[in-house]
Image 1: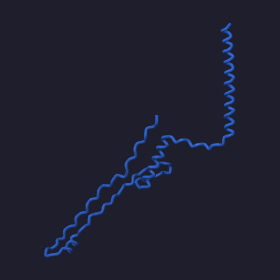
Image 2: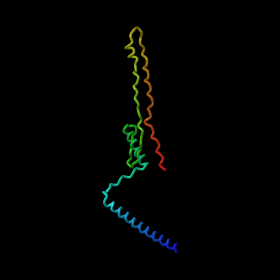
Image 3: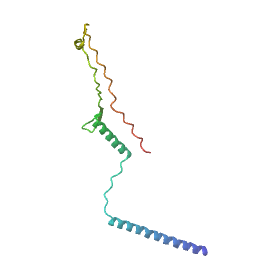
Image 4: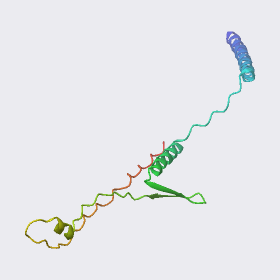
Length: 143
């Protein structure tokens, strides 16, 4: 008989707990509805950019910098295709002064005779320097 009373008390307690949980859930829903009604409207925040989007934006900024410096030329097609051409860098070096035989003869003094020697060839210019360092590969996607 004691076990039966304990069982009845446990059942009553469980029923009361279930009823209180329902009331608490209902009160929370009502509170949330009131908060939404009374809070000022918030503008939607822009979504955070994905890592791939961040990489694309950084790449576009770097290309724009290189284009402004005149190191690359970006060609955009009507269908949205993009071609990137490296602009060759030309380094001008001052040429050595060329002395002709006539100038030598005119400036020579004394009893010796001047000979008409051929003018020396100008020094060859060095090869052009590389345009720009290549861009590093994209970072691996996050796991």
